[in-house]
Image (tube, rainbow, N blue to C red; front, side, top):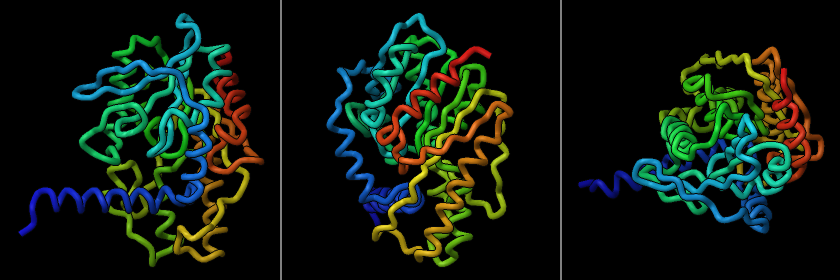
Length: 287
């Protein structure tokens, strides 16, 4: 007989596997670990703990509060605010800027679900922005999986968003495209859908925006390592597909731009932070 604990543990394992399969194609897990250690060398200042429902989220804000729009730095899936420590201090010199540790990460409290479903992650962001008293509208700067979160946020709270910067963003279609590339690999399922990826064959992203938008894409190919079952040829093809995702997102706004981070892998904010800082400056420019 299966207990509730056994079922829940199995579900967590499946969710983690599902996310790692898709996320590993943004950056291999071994590289994620190394980059995390690098980021941890630069600690953000003491956070403000903001209550969101039954938990608290750690929020780090800098810059003059009267400056608007406020820039919000959203870390990628499974990542803390520390990923932005090379970006936030310079941005604070010309804008109000906040980063945060999502639930289950950094100094924030744990959530019931790990990883969080996309709806919960988006609502956490909206709730802490409202509870914090930070002035909108907001420029959302989103890395990796959080690019999907930012698009979902913009759809739901359109009037609260003034601009977007995507930093090597995940794409809603990536699980489907991966399965097309490797039919013998994992089949997209409800666990992928909970995290924001499409799973219905043929489904395509229809999102468009009128907002200023800059998309930064990695210039260096992802090290293949031992973290994928893809062949060398498939892995090269996936890098081409990933570049196509970034270019596609930039075309979703008539004000969109794609910029290639030639010296960076997936973590552009750590390898070429000046490109992220300049993109934020450019999105903030009056139009």
